[in-house]
Length: 269
Image (cartoon, rainbow, N blue to C red; front, side, top):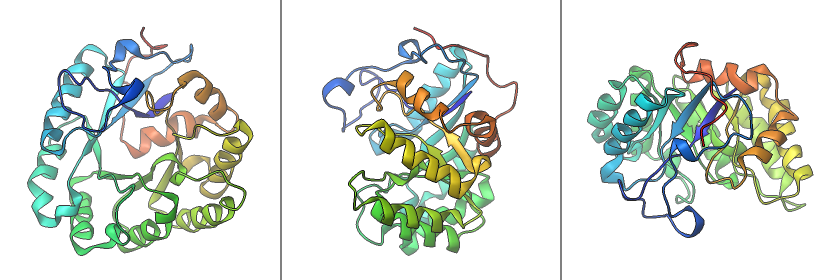
């Protein structure tokens, strides 16, 4: 099992302006409990560190990986919206062996943000560097990122949290139809991650729809720990729709994880 969406942070080491409540404390590998499931590798996803410390976050995670080699990849924060000016940062990230992709969080961005010329230019730079782009968006932004994937077919996009669907009765179909259209883009894969706070049956419905339109070989499992409050119950939910591609194969392919890069672990702590 590969967890393709794992967060770690320590506010005593780096600044995270968004932290509050139960999340405003350190979450390190020793705090992770996988509910007894064997974890062979994990991909760290940037955790909203203050933008000027993004490279420091990568260095900190690299130091953790030396002690916990289950950490097999990093998706780093990157200023893709700066266009050509993002080039030096992206080249530095691409030179770090653990960095497999980048994320510029688009959730809550203004209408049209994914399709600005600056953002398109920044995304295009990824192709020559061999980096993927994680997409964290609101469900209403699905049409915009579908167009983004069409315009930049040379980049692999990873949709986080199945596009963050809402769970109201009238909100399923717009999301479901838009997700199906996004799945028509062959350069997009989807992460079964981050769905909490709803009836398990509704969560299962969203997950099974994602698997149906993308196919298991284009789905990744992500625990979204510690943002998702219960790692073990989330893993149990995903197990209902998962096969080997979902649990490991797609993540290994998309994030280019060597089969021997991580040691098997049931979790530590």
